[in-house]
Image (cartoon, rainbow, N blue to C red; front, top):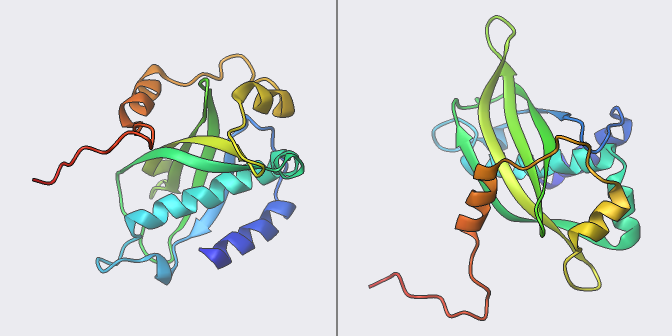
Length: 185
């Protein structure tokens, strides 16, 4: 993933500029190192490539520069992905990434792995969502109001679906100061 990230850093500089709330399309090819023993792209690789596509979105929208100046960096709080079809070696695909909106603590991003079918119609191979936060290198979490002050308010209609907000509540871990109950008996 390191070399893919470096390559995407180079390509992002030359890619078309985007608005922060536009759909970002990032192209990839499934490589031999992406394969598992069943000869399709490993499920964990999908998540890593989603990271690279989000980085591309932040770079091409110009937001990455703002975050670097402020000493902020993104982290994934939770993520989920569903698969429809397997990506095979050397297949080209596109990840479509877009910001869905914010809650009081985090940003939500939708990402789709898309390839054209035999008729050239885009087909979704996998579909994922992440809930992320921005942290300060000096320590602490960037409050959403501070984040929006830096990047601008979202346009009307940018809204996190209710089911995704519920999902984020359902998968949130308790604070670290709470002892984890043993599930192993």
